[in-house]
Image (cartoon, one colour):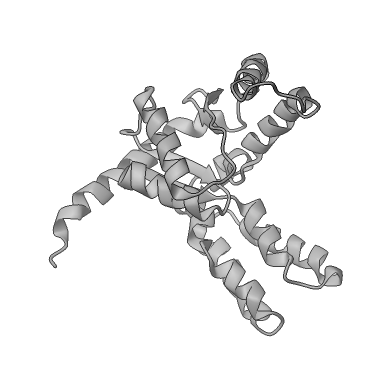
Length: 229
């Protein structure tokens, strides 16, 4: 499922696909369908995702330089601490969260670097988990907008909350006569939910985000012609 946020901070359900996997072909086809239905990518997009590799590859395939990715900090934190003994998880969860809450990129990156060094003496698998996609967990920091928009956009909570509401209307339905009943039921439930969704916190700063995305995507496009093979 894809959830969009307008410049006024309103949440709009863009679409969904019935699938048992999040591999690149399925995700790319879904994203292309959204574009065909009118999703605008030219002003630049901030795509907030978990760590699914197929989805990340699909974003690059379909959107290219028009999209920046903000990896969910909650998923990253949980992926790291699951490698640690249960007795240590709460403390490391808190410390990773504190590092991510630093207001600037330099401060957050330095704090995470110090934790990485400490983790090297405890669990090298946890270090590898932290390293994977780390820079994309700091995208909002890099844009200079984490203090303004981090509460709403640093995690996939907007979509997770939508999934929870959808579950309240669909989870108890377990008998389907035909496969088309499932998407029709989901679409009906989402149509009921969408008008009740609240605007994101910090929405007044979304024009700044759009300007930053436009600047980033413009630089990436101009840079394409500077490489000599």
